Image (tube, rainbow, N blue to C red; front, side, top):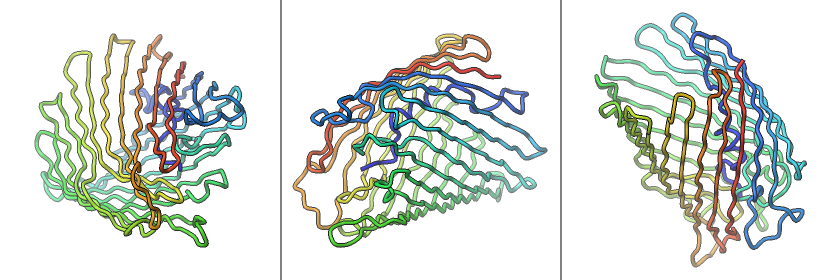
Length: 398
């Protein structure tokens, strides 16, 4: 039952790829390269009471990555583009070897003094998570994203915004083709712009999820199509400059006929607090309660409640240490006709620490340690597991 949650392999590829996400000030185009090594003692997230694939749980892999970053102002416009190409090679499970892609482009546009926004797209190809999917076969996931955002300043203190997003997910493995889907988001917002730089807005959002491949179930076919409508408040509060609060929370109603009564609703959203004093230590924390897709013959989505805490220590001008901990409880919602007396939930926990050293202006070395665990849900056949990952990387900017 794969979810869209990132597998630690994907997490480390992103968290440890310390090549810049933007060009060096004064530079329009920058190139970089990265090489990394990692090892995981439970690569495929095999439950503790289940046999290992090929008699092995652990494996190591090497990542080679090359990328380019373009940041070009064009009068009042700005074009930002990032292209990353990677090759990942495993030591034992060589069938998982793959070529990664991460292409992004955003045009920050402005017309006169009242109209502005963004237009862009992205394409990502990476290994899908194995957290809820027991297999040793390669399963690449391709994600295509397109978005448009426009803002109209009605008054120096008031603004109207709209946002359109389309995400498409495609899975390489034929057994996972039922998880292919398209999600379309339409969002309208009116917000107040305070003199301090803080903003408060009211957001109307609609999400339509469409699954082109129907899932066989019994003598018929299941659909995972859904609609979700939201009314939320968005807050970006800059409290004193060192204690910003960001939040998007409110009410959501979800309609998905393939489970239970086909409709559920309740509080939904995320709030993030950042504490950034003038010293070397910064703190962050988040709380969330939201719906997430989880493709299965007995479960169609989860209601996730989570908390994360993190800290960044800038030990010196060249050394930075980051630590994060996440706990998320997933409450599964069964389809109609599935009877279970309890145990329709589990908990995912992860903790990580990462250190980076800017050896020279364009050379950075980094290392990270990640631990992840899942409590499991025996009723749904989801076992508990533990996994530890260690990784080291070197990146060079040209």
